[in-house]
Image (cartoon, rainbow, N blue to C red; front, side, top):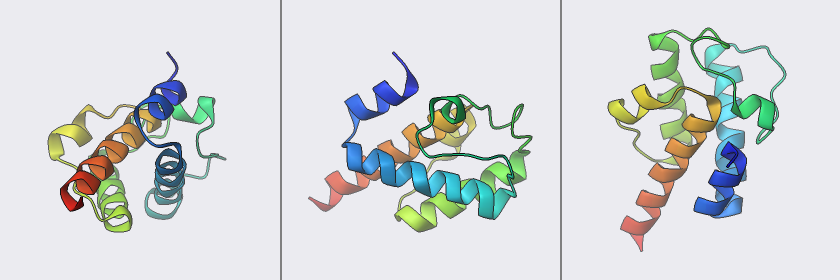
Length: 105
């Protein structure tokens, strides 16, 4: 199952699109990624944060903080450490958003 299919099967599609846009915007604004990225593009979802995008640990923390601020969620250090690709990071953010929505309901 592709990362995109997994995400849309697991989370509300509107949430996935919104979270994907937040992640891409944070990669560009906070981490200076200049590679053309489109939200939910299969090739972009597979890009590895460290190897392909050359994000170091500080970049990844800044990225997580930007996502947390935008979505009003908390991403644990463990979940951040496990996120290897853009798709993983989107899934992590979607899971955090889903948890927050359940707490509010």
